[in-house]
Length: 373
Image 1 (tube, rainbow, N blue to C red):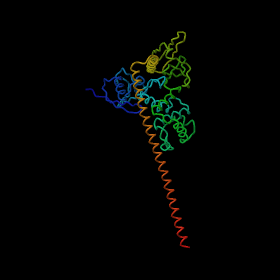
Image 2 (image 1 turned 60 degrees about the vertical axis):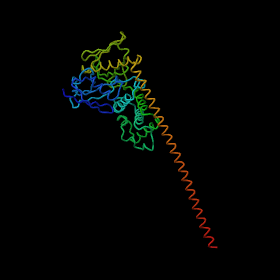
Image 3 (image 1 turned 120 degrees about the vertical axis):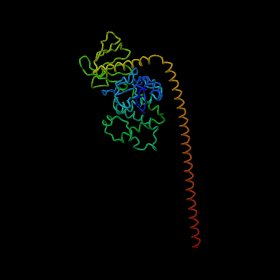
Image 4 (image 1 turned 120 degrees about the horizontal axis):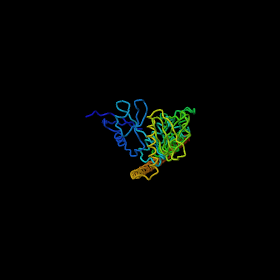
């Protein structure tokens, strides 16, 4: 029997260990991962690894694990990450596990590491949703000053841009946190993603390229199409092609050609630093284009069933939580009423004791006066 190969796959919130055979394909490993985490919306995700040159790249599902240029380690290391992003998170991310994995990837990696540019005011609002997702409703009895001291919630750039103390940042985030009272954990994560998806760099894969004149540019690939950016500005696209406007994308060695559907429009030609990068670009274009076209067709039976199942489960969970919250509220009210009755009894007891002491004192004074007479 061939010796098994140890593999470690890191998701955004877990580490998974597998023993695979030398004949195991990327698809078989990927299927093991999604089955383990209970994920059904698999089309957004992929396995990432560091190759022998130190570059991060996506795993090819149709090739054997041993045939890919994975850095030789024991165990072999992979990351399970979102490879493709939805156009509208509230419409497309159905499963709670899918929402959580996207939330953690966008929040913990992209926003905090400044891979997605986020203005300071938006960063504070996003941080407050992350806090609501972690801590639930703000409670001044539990969440004392300093309760966010050990949480990394804002990009370093934002902290350096505005010279506020940790306490001042916490006050700002806490102010928003208080506003989210009653919001469920999964709703907080979804609100976070709904704001994040409107940021210019959200869901964009950037590649350094050169045009035919040798000028350095950025190519951005996302759910809606391709964009070309100047090298010093990843926020404002200079040229854009939606997937519906592109007839074909082809490459020959380092040269890549984008042909628009409009035959009067000129082709856009660029050069990648290496042939391998052109292959990555083409794979991302094909995957994004496929999802773009799928969104514009009626949902498959599988997706319809998945949506119905998840909605039913979500409604049941919300009802259970509402009942629990009502029960909790009733207990709190009964507790408050009991405390009020105890306070009243205590007041009455104190008044009675005071009246009794006055009565005893009066009897004592009267007795002393009668003795004098």
